[in-house]
Image (tube, rainbow, N blue to C red):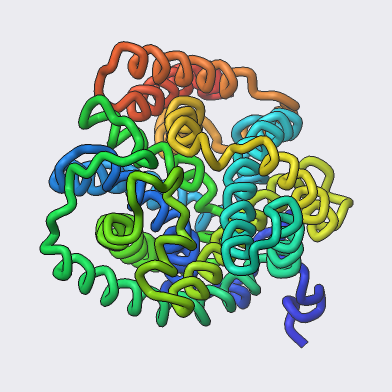
Length: 425
């Protein structure tokens, strides 16, 4: 009996290093990533972008520039995950200290909760559109479905992704090309009620980066299952270029065909059913499920660090119930504002992670210095985080390019210089 079987199917190496026998091939991780990217969010983002009033080459430019930044962060943080074999929540202890990591994870849970609630809300909307039952009822049905799958963690996410993603991604790709040629690709610059407002090219890039900046430093959660950094690079490169750039760009063709100025929101289920009928609705429903499942897995891994004695499935239960409250608050309809806020609040974190694992060791500082000195809270990390947030906000407020990179670099520099005090000690 393997060690993985001894600990039970629900065990997901929440607070321990993933053993070699539990690692996965690169395509398995790529499917999981595509399950996160290729979802209702992709269709919804396509609707928002095509309704933004900008020409196609700007939209494609936003996706390429923004996601190249994200890919670089994925690879850097993914390498840390391969090295440590621990989830992000426990890698944070190496940087922030044991109790500092709890503060970090509490803030992180609050953010991911909004993402997870978005997934459940989309799933509930699909059930409402199909049955006519009020969203206040279907939200609980959707929450139950997500709870059932997310409780088993990476295993279920992997199975669900492998069953859904290869077929659905192929079908989506063909259908999107079909509608593109059907419309003669003549829909760019369409301005509609559901479209977002981007005042400049860099506002569009900031929106794209904001969508996935949190996912960038959560990559250790899946990269710890990779056999090597090389395998994780292959998985991330494939999934980012195919899922986050190409398919998101092509999803504009479906949205432009399906939605009208009278539609108040770029509802993924509506887009799918108006272009692909019942089959499209089922496809969108399952894709949304894979994303919500993934989000709650990340959530529960962060919750485990707060108090490891409680089982992860119990945390899942609490989180799913709390997400219903977030849904009732209407976060889905502030999608653009939410993504922009993320691009200000969180870019400092991957900067701090990269500084700690790639730059600080070159200065002669032990990576595990915080733990070895029994520092419950690494104040330096929080100071760097605050400075990064302030810089990103100021750059954004003055309409300067790439506030997320400004926040990341400033946090990276401040953290690296401040950690000099530990050199040789």
